[in-house]
Length: 216
Image (cartoon, rainbow, N blue to C red; front, top):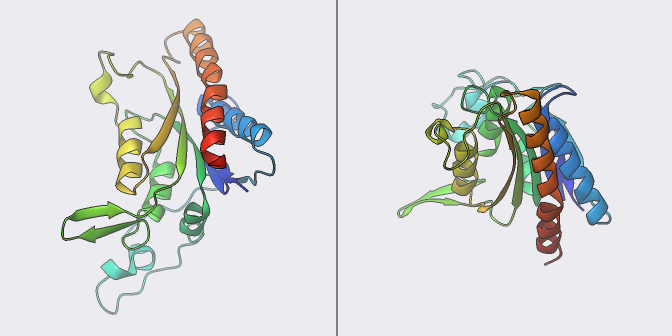
């Protein structure tokens, strides 16, 4: 069983843009390929664009992270975000649609991450440093960028999107991360078409590897 937010076996996919979004197209194609490859896959979708999670602020922090709240402080209800952690913990495949916004990730996706990075749930502090508690999951990131930021590109150092996602999931104990990347989308219509074609061509290989891990 996998479910998707858009994915979750749950697997999990997070969608952010409208119908012309490259990351949405790639994440949808990835989930469709996973469903075709893995019989009985359960898919759950969470569209962070249509139904955004409230950003974590001082009013919600005591609710989301009660262990960090001063004694006696009660936070407001975390409407829209309360189910996210359970969904994440149940997932074993996650497909994330992640466009680059100003060298980073969309704030909607950051709000989702703020609900899953919880001490005692997905990571733990120890005398030897933090350890991730959410290992065993596979993450597929459908990444879209207007410019060129891949390794070896002149603006590689400005990539706080893919590098950040890798760092967050590694911190949570997840090292099995695959990037399906379409970049240079804003350079010209020809660049966009070629980049999307190249990204779509990598999906079958990614799905085959995911299927093998899922069956193991």
